[in-house]
Amino acid sequence: MSERCRSRRSHPAAFTLIELCVVMTVIVILLAILLPALGAARESARSARCLANLHELGIAHLSYAGIFNNYIVPAEYRDPLSSDPTPETMGMWNTTLVDVGVLAITNISKQVPVPANPITSTVFYCPSGDSDAKSDGLPHSLDDVEARRPRRSTSTLLKATVDCWYGINGATSSGGVPGKSSHSLPGRRIPPDNDDNDFQLARMSDVPADIVLLYDGVFMNQSNVDPFRVNGRHKNGTMTNLLFVGGHAESVARRLLPGGTTLGYVDTPSTVAVEFTMPTVAQKFGRVRWILPSSLP
Image 1: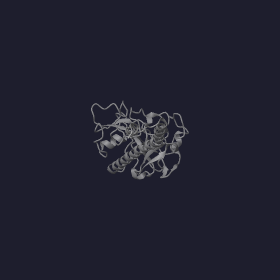
Image 2: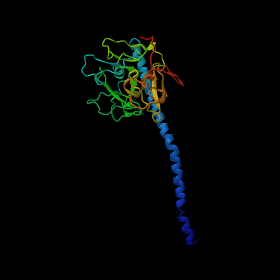
Image 3: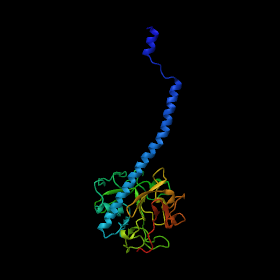
Image 4: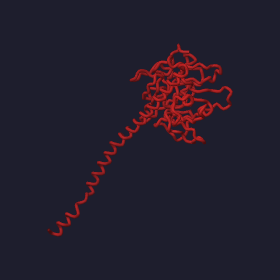
């Protein structure tokens, strides 16, 4: 065998520049196809975990009602004599569920000192939310990061720190929704800001199962005041996860919820704010309703 033949066998032909370009092009095309699918799969997993958290919180609400004469847990407790009415000093619905023992305490932080950053190891954490800072509770638009951040509270009895990425369908005063009774939402501050003697709570069995109880977002939606506290944080900001009084959790298009088609900040009643009073919004699971029937106390 000649020296030239032996040399060809011991040194296989290398890729040409054109062949390398073709291979690289194929890889780029495959990445362009696969990466969005992988991102969508990750977001679907985050949304599924969020729905599972809401479902667990729904079970906790039902357990609370079973213990406390069928009453829905107060959205918040207010001490009329307190000079420091902040989330850190007032018991919220989430800290109440922890204090009464219907949620496992193992994942609730009792660290001293309290961690500066939000605590993400609990059922109150939405994996599609932001955990870079605590929310001030005042989002100014549909895409304001304040609605994706958690609101921090401290439980009254156990002194456990709770960061919560979910809001409750409730109001801080008993003024309610125009044209409705003074208690128009299932979640209520006890006592409300405008009546130190009002301790009326809604009963779980009296509230229709399709009324919204919890939502992706922050604090309370304040009856007809601030729809931007309801946050579209799933699937590129287009979907919101809701928990209903009956215990069912579902993803809903954010554009079909109050404030969903309007830009700008709302902190007074307006055409956007009163969308909470619209009769219903049709969805595949039935109807999205925020307001209680006027016949309820």
